[in-house]
Image (cartoon, rainbow, N blue to C red; front, side):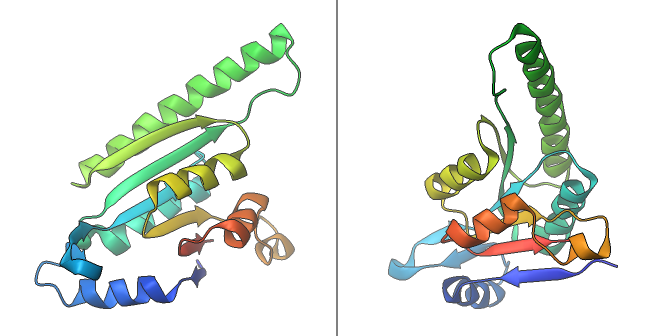
Length: 172
C-alpha cells in the first residue's frame, strides 16, 4: 500500500482551485490573466520506485494535460581512472536508454515531455533544473525497503524539500 506525503505551497493550492474551475482542466490562470500549461518535474532514476512515481503522476494529472519535465542525473566518477571513465560512460548510456523509454511511456499517454539527462551531484543538478524550469510541482520517489527506512526521506528528496521553493510531492 502506497503512502503519499504532499508538501505543497499556498500558491499551488490556489492554482489547483483555478484548474478545477476550468472547463477542460487544462490551463490555469495566474496574475495578469495569462493562461499557462501546468508543468510537472519528475525525478527519474530508473528504479521501480521512480517508475511508480511517474505512472502515478500521469494517472493523477493526465486530465489536466501537463507538460512533464523528466529529469535523470548521472554522477561523475570521483577519480579520473580509465576504468571509472568506462563505468561512467556505460552508466550514462544505460540512463539515457531508461530516459528514452520513460519519455516514450509519457508521450504514449498523450502528454508532452521534456527529457533532461544531467551529469553531476543529483541533489544540486535537480535543484538547478527546478530553479531554471520553475515547475508547478516536483515529484520525487522516496526509497526505503525496511519499515525504518520507509519512515525517512532519501538524501535527494530530503535535500529538495529543504532547498526547493517549488511544491513537492514525495511518493513512497
